[in-house]
Image (cartoon, rainbow, N blue to C red; front, top):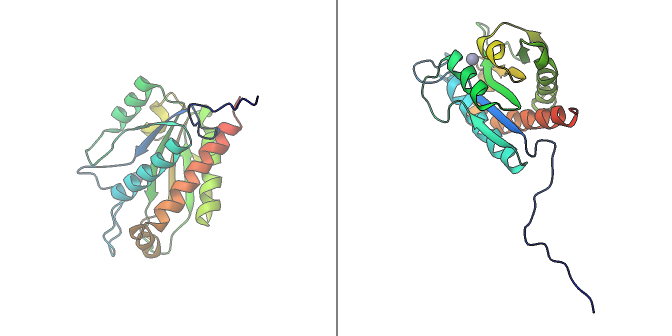
Length: 197
Ligand SMILES: [Zn+2]
């Protein structure tokens, strides 16, 4: 007699982020639009939120629990964002922003960190964003931003590209850039957790 074993539950593939809790922080919101492209009128707060929503979907498919500091368009203070993270205790905190410059030609990716426990996360996210978005690598920098300084979990603030670049802001409107950036952040998180232990 042959006995077939049929598993009762279909388990999705294990990934390095499975079982991890990741807090995503879409920068700005409400009366604070963040940077605005004066020619296309694209505001940073909406691009930050679009990337966070896309990334959340991807990470949940990968088995992570995803927490958000804002899911829509309220104003949330910087200290409030860090306090929320410290109360809920995620494994990492990722703040998603986009850069601005007076020159429409400025572009590229940079990622900030403050506390020593955050460098590896910032480095992994920055590399993966550059690879997926084919941007100029402006590197990781230590900066004293409130959300990265006050958060206990390893915390990075990404500026994947410049909202003040017209080509960039138009690509975001078409959503293909949102997808590329979310994939860059997803892979950066997978690589980061793959190198933990
Ligand atoms: Zn910003």
